[in-house]
Image 1: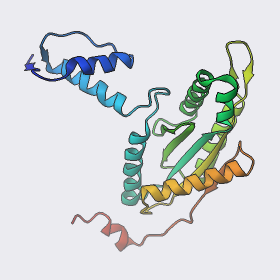
Image 2 (image 1 turned 90 degrees about the vertical axis):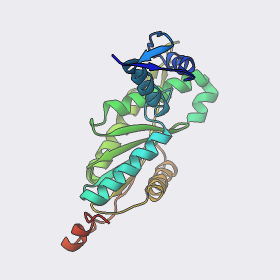
Image 3 (image 1 turned 90 degrees about the horizontal axis):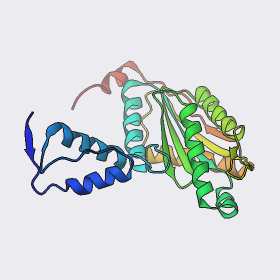
Length: 230
């Protein structure tokens, strides 16, 4: 197997980061084979795109994936939807029970998102107590059902604390949908979903609000033009 002279590569720093993140990294000499270096690179790529607390995609990865999905909608005509999910009264949870319990709440929500999504969907830690879910090939009707299922699942599965107390958690969800063939900027879609999330929270929390645009028709010449390379 080919050997690579690592020279001044900061392999020890990279290995330390991976071990801190829970990866098992074998020790090698100053010269490392390509497979070992590739494993280190793969691990670094994974932790750079993941949220350390929940294991979901982080904000950087979310933005990149959303850009890709919006491009796919414009090119192929497949619909998509975006969910923004916010934990209700999260500051009160931290103030009452402490930040370790707050972390458990966020991990519990992340677990429910994984349980209620399709293999093609991407859950993300959007920031703080907010999450997002990218739903490819998803119509407004299906997106609203998914959002309702997630909301209900979180509400119906309270967190059991170490002292035996039960902590009921609820979320508010804003849904924004992209019609087939629609060309939409990432920030515009995120702002739409955020407005719906605001509606859900000001409407009483523990509910879903959705923005479902009218389906846009595309003529055959316009559709053909989408595939013409410049």
